[in-house]
Image (cartoon, rainbow, N blue to C red; front, side):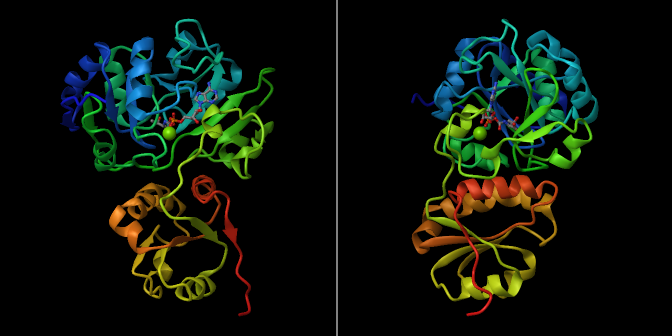
Length: 348
Ligand code: TXA
Ligand code: MG
């Protein structure tokens, strides 16, 4: 791919983003921070910009892009909204949720991978909001990683993947949630919703909106069949060495990994000092699911570093707590592990 000079902008205030907004309006690509992960944005009304996004990421063009708006009030311009959308928007927007609804014609088919539906998201990060407002356009954006890599949760991750491939990268520091937005699809009958991807808006929170909440089986089990979110049919991110989740409490987990020299370990703060592996990294305090979310993709990228990957044969991750955003952390981890979960015997 042709190398372009990538403009880097450090975000301080909205005024810093004027050149980036101009790039979007002119059909170019800008990576920007959101409260979940960094996005790779282009004009959502321009099918050529969508093609450029697929090319820069190396992503199959039938995997639809999410459309980012400055306000939920604009959703009706691009999609057929309904009372359930209004309830979700009142409760969670701006914030880490994407709602899938029938699309209006103004959104090109190339943006939705040929689907008749579109994902609408209103991010809360001030840089994302300013970029959308200043460009005066809806912004189509997948996560700003090369296809098959973990989503980027810092400016450095985006630079590693996309420097020289896109026009501009905005530096907004580390992302608040670190896992991608919750995705829900509104049922065709408008009588309930289906959770396609867990995120910081948890199933418990969604149950406050409607009791008719279905969790797509692909969320926690190996998927067989036609997926609702096309992204799920592609080989998902897998680390450079085999990863397994180990379903064991502190002392048993420590013993399991210490008996296996040469492994890499993803653990929590409480176990860290007891683990003898040379390559170990903590997701945070054992009960701190929010911190696990913030650190997860950075931990996975750590083990993809060729120097580290060379030194280990396998990676073991401690089973995270699944409450709150922990369910999303578990979902990303178990997919990265290809659904490999080991439950060690309590007696050796
Ligand atoms: O937090 C996020 O959602 C981030 C930030 C940048 O907003 N974006 C993100 O986009 O994670 P992406 O493209 O990496 O993941 C979007 C997922 C894909 O699996 C895609 O297949 C699914 O959403 N998706 C998008 N539009 C869809 C639609 N109309 N129907 C079903 N699934 C859809
Ligand atoms: Mg992605």
